[in-house]
Structures are given as C-alpha cells and as structure tokens.
Image 1: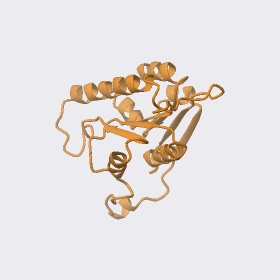
Image 2: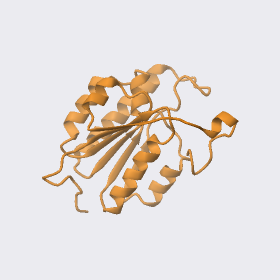
Image 3: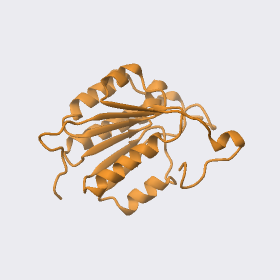
Amino acid sequence: MKKKRLKKNQKGLVIIFTGDGKGKTTSALGMALRAAGHRKKVLMVQFIKDFSDYGEIKFSKRCPQDIEIYSMGKGYVGIFGDKLPLSEHKKAAKRALEFARKKGLSGRYFMIILDEINVALKLRLLKVDEVIKFIKRLRAKVHLVLTGRNAPKKLIKFADLVTEMKEIKHPYTKGILAQEGIEY
C-alpha cells in the first residue's frame, strides 16, 4: 500500500476540539471520513473509552483499510461504578500514547486522532509535557487531532486550530439517555 504522508509543502496541523458541548469526537470522525475519502489513512486512539459498541468502532472494523480505531482506555475514571485504581487508568493512558507514537512513526498515517486525550490530561493520567513531546515528534509527519473537554491552556497555545464546543441545549437535561448512532 502506498504511504499517505504529508506532501512536502504541507505542515502537520495540531487541531483541538474541546469544550462542554457535544461534538468533539464527532468532529474528529468527520475529519477522518474526509481524509479517508481522499484515500488517506487515519488512526484514532481512544483514551478513557473502552467500549466496542460505539458506531465508529463497528465502522472501522468494516473499513480498516481507511480508518483504524483502537479503544485503549479502562473506562470512565471515578464515575459510573469505576472501581479500578487510578494507577490502572494511568498505565492504560501511557500505553495508548506509546501505541500512537509507534504507529505515527510508521509513516502509514495521514492523520492521528487522540480521542479524549484532554480528559486524560485533566485527570492527570498523562502529563501535558509528554503530550507536547509526542506532538513535536510527529507533527512533521501527520496531522494530529486531540479531543476532549478541558484542553490545557499550554496545549491550546501549542495548537494550530482550536474549536470549543459550547452546549446550548442537550436532550440529557430532559432525561433522554444517549442514543445509538448519535452519541455512540
């Protein structure tokens, strides 16, 4: 397979989707779909999340030649019945970042999405400086998309594009639970 690296005149962009509103992962997936439409390979590594029932994971299994998704978290940290020690979540986050680094250095990918990495940073599962080191190492090779609430200011300053999702209205406030095909 032909490698889908950046062209010589392109710069690897660092893109952040953050904020309290819905749409961060969805926006990143939209970018993945657009890149795949141009026959460019995309890698998504999900931090925190550990579910195989998400629609994007089901899709990537049907079209692995375009978009690879690896859910490498241990689940939500400290909520929804989480009983794992924080150290287990930290190990999972470090493994996910190292996995993304190795994959990124392979030269096979046009874009790497680090889904919910901002949450991993907020929960101190990773350090901002190690993520910036990761970015510096890979930004000349790929576009990097980082998602999740509470993006650190230091990371925002380092990014080329930052979009903040702001919640205006959400069905959850009316007691409507997450909908298949919409939230997952």
